[in-house]
Structure formats: structure tokens, C-alpha cells
Length: 80
Image: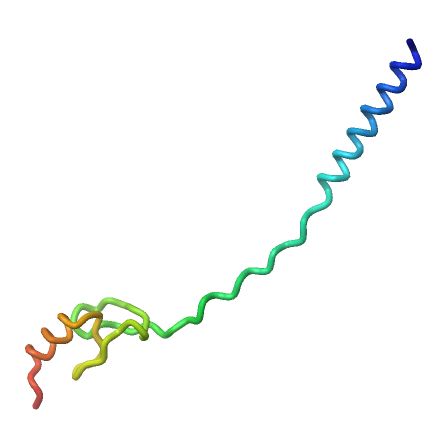
């Protein structure tokens, strides 16, 4: 009977040590992914909205966030 208790105690001890060593090992840290190609931000000349330069529309008075704002701005500011 003492032999069975001793074997069980050793097995429990080994199981605990195995769990403790596995918790210490950490997976390697991932490198952060580089951000997508960044573009400079521009401001709509009509409403002041900030948007990426690739999404803006050029116009007579600057850049605009959409066709409606470009048309409205050009209507309010006729060419000299």
C-alpha cells in the first residue's frame, strides 16, 4: 500500500513540474506588421474634412472630399 502511495506522489510531482516548465516557455513575440502604405492627409477646401490625398478630388481652389463640395466651392468662388 505504501508503494502505491509513493508512486502516485512521484507521478503527481512529475506532472506538476512538467506543467510549471511548460508555462515558463513563451512563444516568440510576433513582429508587428508594417502599416499599409501611408498617404499624406489633406483638408477639403469647402468643409475642412481630413482625408487621404489619394481619395481627394483636385479643384480650382484646392482639394475636395467629393464632387458636390468641389462644385459648390467653385460656384461660390468664380474664376477671376
